[in-house]
Amino acid sequence: MGQGRSEGDGRALALAYGIKAERVEDPADLHRVLGRAMSARGPVLVDVVVQPLEEANAPVSKWVA
Image 1 (cartoon, rainbow, N blue to C red):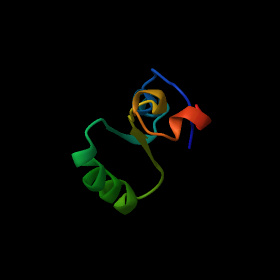
Image 2: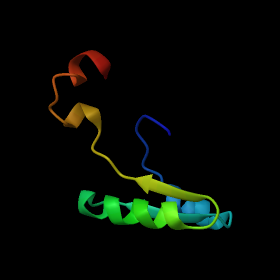
Image 3: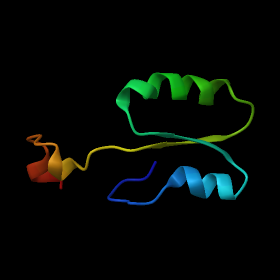
């Protein structure tokens, strides 16, 4: 569970090493992708793209970021 800014594609990296992987860019897909990952045999990397905290306009961003 990484934190911070990353422009990388964790899914592509995992696939390059032969690891099953999914990438979620749309929040509506998260439940479906997590369900597939949980029912898979063996490890699965789920790369979830999120909005940077600094851009979220959340009050917490002032004291965390």
